[in-house]
Image 1 (cartoon, rainbow, N blue to C red):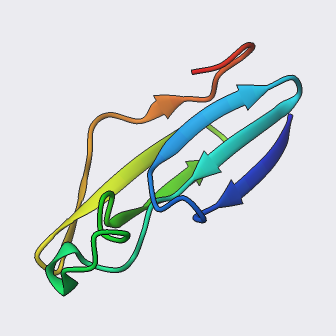
Image 2 (cartoon, one colour):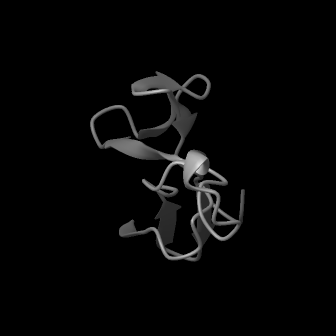
Length: 79
Protein backbone atom coordinates (compact mmCIF):
# COMPACT_ATOMS: atom_id res chain seq x y z
CA UNK A 1 0.00 0.00 0.00
CA UNK A 2 0.82 3.70 -0.20
CA UNK A 3 1.04 5.58 3.10
CA UNK A 4 -0.01 9.14 3.88
CA UNK A 5 1.04 10.27 7.35
CA UNK A 6 -0.24 13.65 8.55
CA UNK A 7 -1.37 15.57 11.60
CA UNK A 8 -3.62 18.24 10.15
CA UNK A 9 -6.83 17.33 12.00
CA UNK A 10 -5.09 16.91 15.39
CA UNK A 11 -6.99 13.65 15.91
CA UNK A 12 -5.44 10.21 15.78
CA UNK A 13 -6.74 8.12 12.91
CA UNK A 14 -5.98 5.00 10.89
CA UNK A 15 -8.00 4.45 7.70
CA UNK A 16 -7.61 2.82 4.30
CA UNK A 17 -9.11 4.11 1.08
CA UNK A 18 -8.33 1.87 -1.88
CA UNK A 19 -4.58 1.17 -1.94
CA UNK A 20 -3.78 4.13 0.36
CA UNK A 21 -3.45 3.92 4.15
CA UNK A 22 -3.97 7.24 5.96
CA UNK A 23 -2.39 7.71 9.37
CA UNK A 24 -2.98 10.82 11.43
CA UNK A 25 -0.56 10.90 14.33
CA UNK A 26 -2.48 13.37 16.51
CA UNK A 27 -1.19 16.62 17.98
CA UNK A 28 1.99 17.42 19.89
CA UNK A 29 0.45 20.51 21.55
CA UNK A 30 -0.56 19.52 25.10
CA UNK A 31 -4.10 19.99 26.34
CA UNK A 32 -2.78 22.15 29.18
CA UNK A 33 -2.30 25.09 26.81
CA UNK A 34 -6.08 25.56 26.83
CA UNK A 35 -6.67 26.08 23.10
CA UNK A 36 -9.75 23.96 22.23
CA UNK A 37 -8.44 23.30 18.70
CA UNK A 38 -5.43 21.40 20.01
CA UNK A 39 -4.66 18.64 22.46
CA UNK A 40 -7.62 16.41 21.68
CA UNK A 41 -5.22 13.56 20.89
CA UNK A 42 -1.94 14.89 22.26
CA UNK A 43 0.58 12.27 21.26
CA UNK A 44 2.12 10.60 18.27
CA UNK A 45 2.05 7.38 16.25
CA UNK A 46 4.68 4.79 15.37
CA UNK A 47 4.29 2.92 12.09
CA UNK A 48 5.95 -0.51 12.16
CA UNK A 49 6.20 -1.69 8.57
CA UNK A 50 7.65 -5.08 9.55
CA UNK A 51 4.64 -5.99 11.72
CA UNK A 52 2.12 -4.03 9.59
CA UNK A 53 0.82 -2.13 12.61
CA UNK A 54 0.51 1.37 14.03
CA UNK A 55 0.80 2.15 17.73
CA UNK A 56 -0.75 5.39 18.93
CA UNK A 57 0.70 7.08 22.01
CA UNK A 58 -0.69 9.73 24.35
CA UNK A 59 1.20 11.85 26.83
CA UNK A 60 0.71 11.35 30.55
CA UNK A 61 2.39 14.57 31.64
CA UNK A 62 5.76 14.34 29.88
CA UNK A 63 5.64 10.55 29.58
CA UNK A 64 4.37 8.93 26.36
CA UNK A 65 2.18 5.87 26.97
CA UNK A 66 0.65 3.50 24.40
CA UNK A 67 -3.04 4.26 23.91
CA UNK A 68 -3.68 0.55 23.43
CA UNK A 69 -2.24 -2.43 21.61
CA UNK A 70 -0.81 -1.94 18.11
CA UNK A 71 -3.50 -1.45 15.45
CA UNK A 72 -3.10 -3.74 12.45
CA UNK A 73 -3.01 -1.91 9.15
CA UNK A 74 -6.42 -2.20 7.46
CA UNK A 75 -6.31 -4.59 4.52
CA UNK A 76 -9.31 -3.17 2.66
CA UNK A 77 -12.15 -0.71 3.11
CA UNK A 78 -12.07 1.72 6.02
CA UNK A 79 -11.36 1.44 9.70
